[in-house]
Length: 527
Image (cartoon, rainbow, N blue to C red; front, side):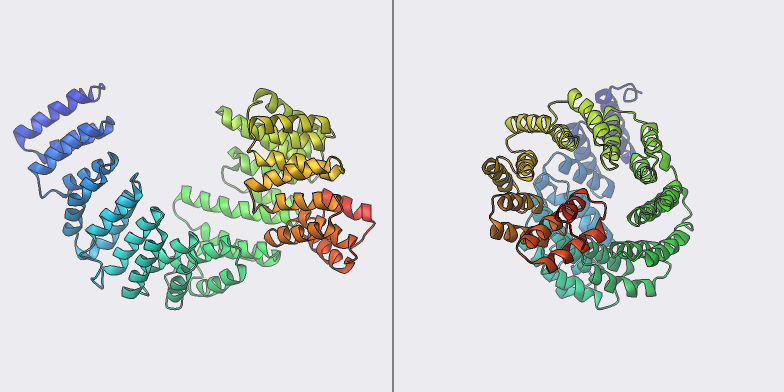
């Protein structure tokens, strides 16, 4: 009663007294739980310590001590209790326990110490053939979590030596691959040459897809679909790969296959979520094909989609492209907003709808309201400046960007935008170069800023420098506007065949791009 009335201190004291008199482990456990719920780590530690001392063979007490010690950042003191927990776990349950240990210790503030404590606790198991792969995989995960990549790779090598075809080895290899450790992928591929678990092969496919390695992803996915034709995730991924390669008919076939399988999920919430992702993909594919009516049909099938801003924004875009801009705006405005942040996101979605559908004046006016309400928000200021320029208000754009740069000199997007605007208008080119070079110092690998610098060089008459920069930017990002600039520089240097080829490819990707269309019209070129 004391605890329920908010007096946790007295409630815990009373429970402890009852536990001592009765020597009831259940009462010790209840006292510990209430102490923890009251967010008093020290009180929870004191109760758990007494509980574990009075019941030294209690796994529940031991686990509670582990939890409390890690919560208090007393990681080194947890060694004894972790050793005891691992010793008590039956061999056939140890792999699952390792996973729980990895999750528990990955939250420790001192990541390196946590990894060292776990590695010490697993010393008895790292040489046992039936346990070594899972044990080393646990160590590797924690070493990676501590940013100790070399030690994580060593753990992977040890896991592979004991179990090259073990799933734990493969999962660690994939985790290291995803973290950018290239040599780890060799171990993952070695596992895939055997008889990989479908879920692990699917995880590898997702990594390849995220790295835009479509052919390799397809090479892994095809045998998976043959072996597991009822795996809905695999068909969803197949649809995604087809979509990225503009293979719309094949993508739709794969998506419909996934839909049939997803409808068989018995749990309603899970089924609706999965179907929602499928219908969202279908709608995006239809948008890419400019089949706006079909896109709306897909979005309308999403369960509960009327309440989701993302879904309604996409549907609004499809309606706007059918000449129903007002209808699209109404859809976005109808989405509930319970917080100030949600209201802000709604306004931004409406601005984006107007911006992308040839309504720059309305987009600017709506964005200006946001800026007037939150003038110190750097992102809102930047977005307002960009829309001001699109609305033909270049003086306003320059004023906002200069104020933003003064307040936030490291906000390199503003530096780049102002420099590019000068270059695009052919004015203040030396200042434009200084601004873009300053932006590039903050983000040296950004292909869009590299493109801006190239455009400045081109306007200055330095065509060779401009071409070298654009080649670099285009190699890093196959973007329509970068391609447009590269084509123009090539055209100016007499390489008209290559310029036409690049422009044709850009047109295939986005025939409505304003910069591309205006460039081709100005140069009187039909690729």
